[in-house]
Image (cartoon, rainbow, N blue to C red; front, side, top):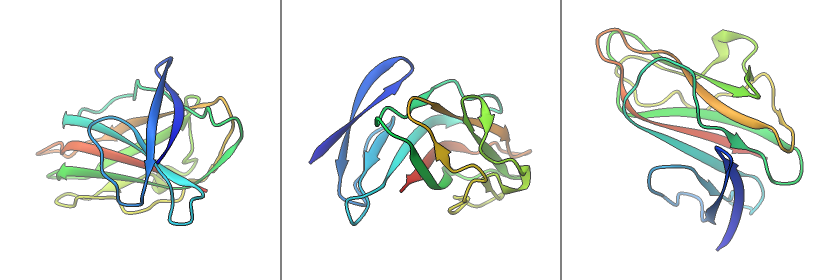
Length: 151
């Protein structure tokens, strides 16, 4: 198993790169794709969702530019009364220039499914954050996982 080093909130973190479908604990973890190229970076936010800006920065410290193929948002406990909607930001600027394209989890659903962003280039050294733009009106949803698929 190989390892990937990325910078999270100013500190270097090693992420195991294992087989597709590998699972991990809370935090961020990288996975290789079936051909060994690309991969998936995941993040986990425990507890009840609260609307607001994402504070944890995930840096592209791969040494080169990468392409974002897709993103996905999922929850363990679904929102009620309305959707949970998220925005992925590169250096504080959305990668979804059309707000209608942002990952959204419908009331009662568990995932947004794969969503292709409008901006797909993630330059070396740049950081990504995830905002919670909207939460369900009768229940916010809880325990969110975010995936960034790279090629």
